Image 1 (tube, one colour):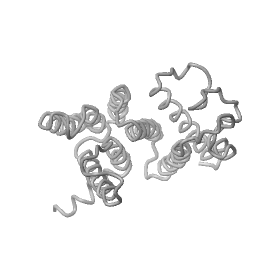
Image 2: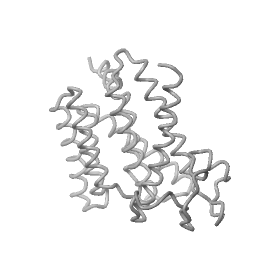
Image 3: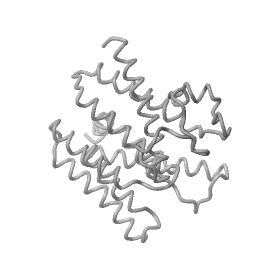
Length: 256
């Protein structure tokens, strides 16, 4: 693929990141995505076109609204940049794989976008949106069935992880884990299938524990503080979406 292809993918990632930032805020504020142009988070002034260019506008405005001067949250810039780089990486890895399949690339771009929504929304508001999860589960089942993934592996993965979360939810009466995590387990299962989804689950628990201990050590949180577990599940799912099969095969070598 030529340089133009990667430039287009990079710009697409920037645009998707900008859109997802706007969608997350509008969803929280109960503002329809089709209701007017982008606006300032604070004074609700509609932005001019030159104030709405991903990354460029943030840097030009020095991270502040040009009118009310309130600081634009840094995660807006982070999402735009990370989406552009991630899209670029996914395109590059697809092109340079042994058997390039652009249906898989489209699937992974969609999955990544949904995972970013789950990650950001849970990180900011400690809530996993049911609509996003069920839409993602349907898309995962559709794409993976089309790509001839084992339907049994997908369903077993979904039942195993959501069942594991549901058991914790019942035993703790919702104190250990929320209903959103139970639903997210279905999405993880139909995206990754069995046994890859187990790797994602282990990664989420280990990373969550390590980050939690670090924050407690730094006195940013206490052991009783709640944790947006959906963020760690999203990270584990993304990693396993790309390298999950390789990790399983690598681990299987030690069991022979």
